[in-house]
Amino acid sequence: MDAGYVRQRKAVRDNRQRVWLRLTRQGKAACHGHLSALRAIVGESDPAL
Image 1 (tube, one colour):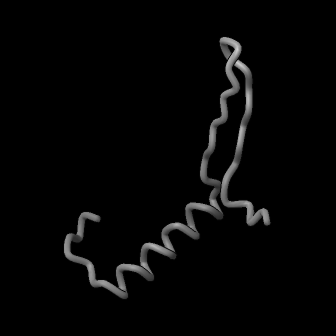
Image 2 (cartoon, rainbow, N blue to C red):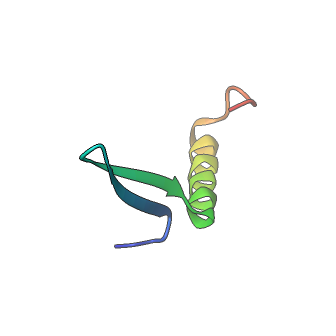
């Protein structure tokens, strides 16, 4: 299932398959939402996190 959270790029370099992964805007928003929910569950101990 593709939620559109990750962008993938593939290439061959030096006879090796390379794969680059990057979060999309939607992926970053989902990640921040999940982190906020987890912090609400366990409590935030360090405001810098």
